[in-house]
Length: 192
Image 1 (cartoon, rainbow, N blue to C red):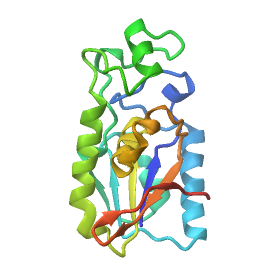
Image 2 (cartoon, rainbow, N blue to C red; image 1 turned 120 degrees about the vertical axis):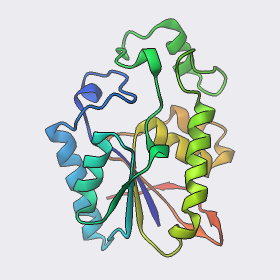
Image 3 (cartoon, one colour; image 1 turned 90 degrees about the horizontal axis):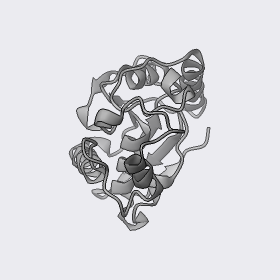
């Protein structure tokens, strides 16, 4: 099984700011969230054979708190969307072009300077293709970010037609998929 987790809370999440590839650490609550997910996995008897994490510290720390002693490999494909000049923008005071993009992700391209959602899905998909052989009969954790996670979910569920882009994914939310016969199952939210 592959378990995909969004990192725990950071100060930028708390302040409702676009974080992107800026490297902010977890808050104390974020550490508690990740530890609670780790406890839930252990209670369910899940021990990870392998852990992949975005290179950003908040995702790596989340992976460490969840997976304990499992080896962690940094994977660039799991990094958050690049918001470019919009990183640090207050979500309650968005520039018009970003607001338009956020209102309808599927019909409006990302503003100039931001990574396009098609790029997020492409890199997520390339990674999942590489992961297929390794994923059979193993438990693997992917520690990532909200938009990168949505890119993974969009790749795994092409019939969603962009529905995941507007789906709220909270800190330390977990989705699970399985690789059967060379294909991934439709991901579902994992409950602790």
